[in-house]
Image (tube, rainbow, N blue to C red):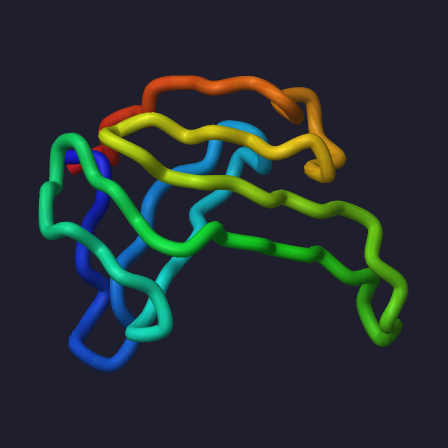
Length: 91
């Protein structure tokens, strides 16, 4: 399974190899319900800020389509501009 439900209120989450962490989506996004080859609309933009600051130190911008993560060029990590298969979440 590539995506898993947190709760009705909090939505879903998946692992992002670019950030080496999990990203979550809530009701603002559309998820097609496929746990093994998910598609999520629209894109997901995550910006990491320094503690007690508004300064952004990392950006992850991606699409999830048919079980693949498509990292956009404005992502600031090593997978920027690449497309990779999603990995299974650990049980």
